[in-house]
Image 1: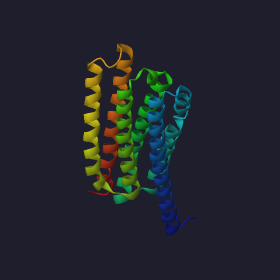
Image 2: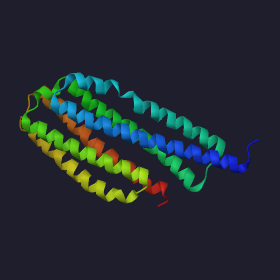
Image 3: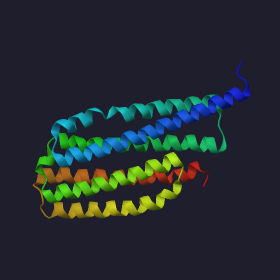
Image 4: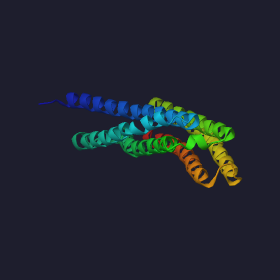
Length: 213
């Protein structure tokens, strides 16, 4: 029969395993986002299709995390900081999964050939949006793994940059930079990048709850 110290050690191992899975989700998301921008701006349809096919890994981690946390809650009855941490994971993981879906949506537009329709100016603009989104998720990932909720201030500044880029893209499309069909698809891509920035900010804001702030 397991003793109380044994149960406590197992509990801490379970928490560490959860954190490893969350950090892995951040890592996979960053990779997907970077690849989505590359395939869209390069017009590499074959590689874009490969990016779309790999989308399921984060979905699987999301399901595994939920199952692990439910098991921990049933067996260990965590309280205080440990409970706040697990509740935060349950809130953050779905946002990571949805963000990965947004990266996949960008890659899907690339797979459909949208990149070939973009002007050099729009290619440059997409790269800038991709750069900001990647920076935001790099900050968000480090904030999570280092438990640094103060990173919210950095992310708010980057989110302002993303909003400005999104508005500028909207103006270009409204000005007739593309024919109607590609313009509609590009407007969606711009929205996907804007939402990716919002999610990076939101998941980092949740660190305050985990820390008891």
